[in-house]
Length: 372
Picture 1 (cartoon, rainbow, N blue to C red):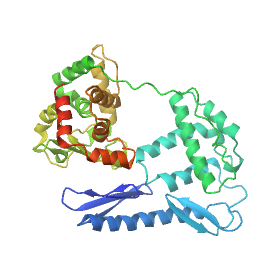
Picture 2 (cartoon, rainbow, N blue to C red; picture 1 turned 90 degrees about the horizontal axis):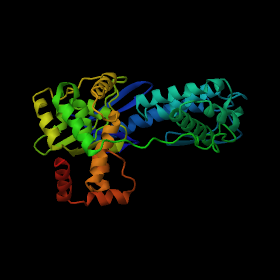
Picture 3 (tube, rainbow, N blue to C red; picture 1 turned 30 degrees about the vertical axis):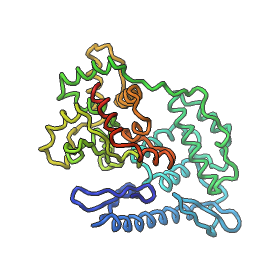
Picture 4 (cartoon, one colour; picture 1 turned 45 degrees about the horizontal axis):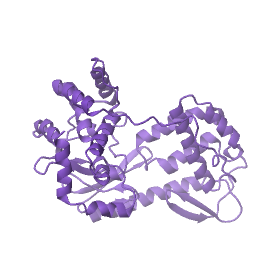
């Protein structure tokens, strides 16, 4: 059950809880039942959004008559006073856009990413957004050197100015017609071949103390943060199920929210994974089994590749790509793969199809991967 993209989760103590990030802090609500937690979450979320709405309305530059302003899905028609003829500068609008539309709706590490990308627009910080032109934005994007960063800055500009235009802070949207940078071409997703994967697994098994976390990412197709958040409470050895409902980032250890709603899932615990995780059954069920930082994990991966293994230097996320590639090579149904790895399943029809896939069909797919 969710409310405005906030998931209600069953706590290990048996009650239900949900969290909302507001002004840099988490606010939690608890209930003895899911319905009780939902009621508290709804009241809290609505209160937070009204506060954001009030803050935005207090700074909106006016046009004559009634105005329609949208904040995080809340639409209000109101009479507003004139701010100034100048309106928001780009730096002021970025801060307002971030606090009113993003904080509390995306993870803290995503907020950090927006701030880093915005630094590429320093030349426009003090320019009123109403005076910024298509040419000025295009030049700012073209001055970014790295292709991936160029694309990210383009995306940031598109989002910021679309919200400003929709809320009538600017008469025209100068970012609307800016095309995606031509120089940007996503790198082809890399993955190990079957032989390379076997070699990687063998190296990890020879030194589990160092490389077991990397091996789990590969065997289960987990995101790095999902693996780092694993606790014994997530393992159900009797049914062979691994539960994924948290993601850990050492830069924001208090933020355990997963990437999206689809990321909260249950997936099969494959044979080798089960063997590796059994030793943690006696641990405190609520303690993380891999107490590594992001940097420490990256260092271990680098150390592994420095052994002259003649393997492509994949990232931890490309270990996940390898899992997905093996699934496709084994002919596993795409809907099953999406469910296992926590990809959003697009349409209601697609979701309905998934729910009718027989359990014995999924068991057959599990056996296929265990056989590798």
